[in-house]
Length: 98
Image (cartoon, rainbow, N blue to C red; front, side, top):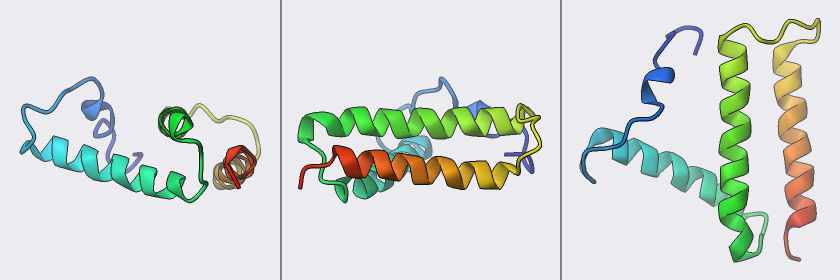
């Protein structure tokens, strides 16, 4: 996001014109990728949409904060991202059905 300021922000709040809109295709691919990852956690079907929304929200928040230089503490931002992903992974493993 830092290499191309404004590109991500330009995608927020817009809706694809139709199913053939390149934005619709990209959005579907992104959501399908996230959903495929989440299926590996064997969540209850009713929880899958909540997990998808959580994942998108966390990644969005992190990206927006990083792009706006919102991380001012001394720890490495990449280390924080890795820690966050590991934390989410542990939570999803605990939430999945076995």
